[in-house]
Image 1: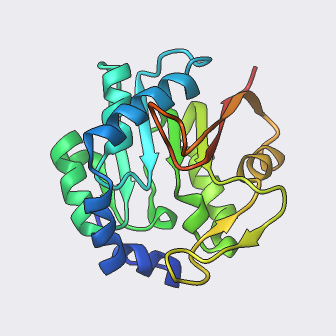
Image 2: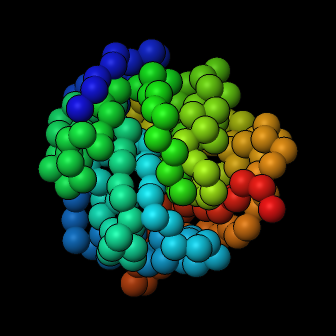
Image 3: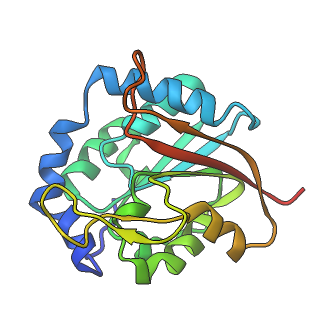
Length: 210
């Protein structure tokens, strides 16, 4: 499980105690059930992927859901928090985990699906173009971006902290950056869904090429 150090205050925030505390809040069976519903809908318009990499995978709750939907899909993850990465390694194998900054991730392996969910909102805006490049380069077919949406960039307080959560049109910026990406499907998950709540996340499924 390779490791690298944080590159910004935002990355250090998640690599440290706050990221450690986040783990316990996000391991429930109810969340897994909601994630299965979420990805079943978000990937409905995609061909079943044979491989998937998640950026900011935490302990693997999203990848667990992907495994339930696509049991034969090879899973890999990038996670900056060392404790979360260790737990993720227990789920998908330590050799399939890169522990460190997304900015430092480099691999010749390309997956059919690249996934990021609730992570771009916490990245220093100045570093987003580099992160977009990592996402784009990691997939041969599909990119699924699931984040808080806002038509223009805005920073909002996050659990009493400033400059730790940013909303914008991430998917739009990505498609503007790469001319061969096209939008396949999109949707919204509501925190008041009576059966499978999420955290008011907008999702965008994009595909490379024709």
